Image (cartoon, rainbow, N blue to C red; front, top):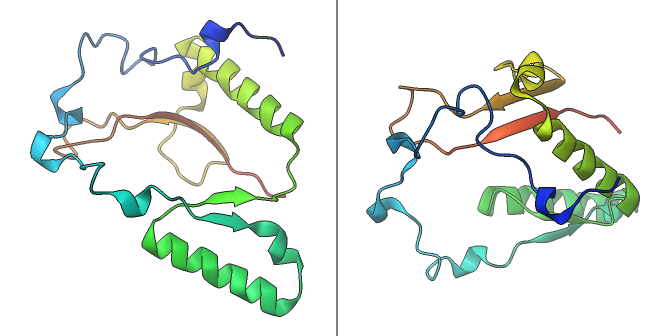
Length: 147
């Protein structure tokens, strides 16, 4: 699982849709007036931390944890999970394999290209010309797992 430091991040700009681009397409440039002011977003600077080990405790603790997750999702839309039981070695191997996937030639990645959100394994991009005025650029691999 060795990888040199220069290749530790995912490859970018190598999918079929992005390869020929010489600059960021205009639909991905958020106008200055619409960009978030990070100095004013202090309430989002503290990410909620949820201890999911509490889900295995008594029913009152479980209920409280579920309500906490619900409230944080409504307020912020995301949170950090701790005590999930996934070992550091599994996390490291997962990131390593994800990086390997993005290092594959575009032809190989395209075998998993899909807009079907119900597919258990898929590859995609947010490049969808003409759908939205401003878009968020992403290239992703999605895998649905059941513990």
